[in-house]
Amino acid sequence: MTNTDVLFWNVDTQFDFVEPAGKLYVPGAEKLKATWNALTKLAAKKNYRVINTADFHYTNSAELSDAPDFISTFPEHCMANTRGAGYVIETDPDDPVTFDWDKVYLTLDEVKTKRNIVIRKDAFDVFAGNPHTESIVEILAPKVVVVYGVTTNVCVNDAVLGLAKRVEKVYVVEDAIKELPNIPLPFENWKKLGVEMIKFEELKNMF
Image (cartoon, rainbow, N blue to C red; front, side, top):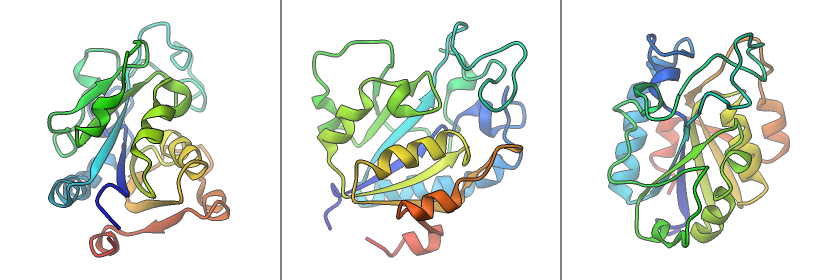
């Protein structure tokens, strides 16, 4: 398997989710930073491309609410061009190409020349929240995608479901994801779809 067959998929490891001072802090997410750092370094060492997804909202975003139910709507978070929308240092992409959800691009060919790709989104599901995601995955055409980040039962789940339809194999790094409370966990459904859970130590020697 070549390094272009493997794609790492970093889901929303942003300040507002990971840091206790963030606007939509996921309890315990900061404890994953060492593993995320190790994943970032592994991708660089093996020259794997990394898709880095990011919430990037404006005040009229459909998922933002002043009276959120914390299931389908949430308080303001990851607002465009704020610190909260930035990545934590452990996953901050090196020299990425960025694709905004609200912009039109004449070409997406730069994904072939950059190792780090940032896909900004305005929905839980990156395939629904950015119209370019589908084409980017098609251009890269990975055989295997390795998923990690936050949160397990919202944006990570949507990424996994979307990828399971589009690539041969999806792995989720089980010690590199964290869930939100009060929302069902997706593990049984992932298993039915052929998604495999692995630990980072296993991943290091897989490809």
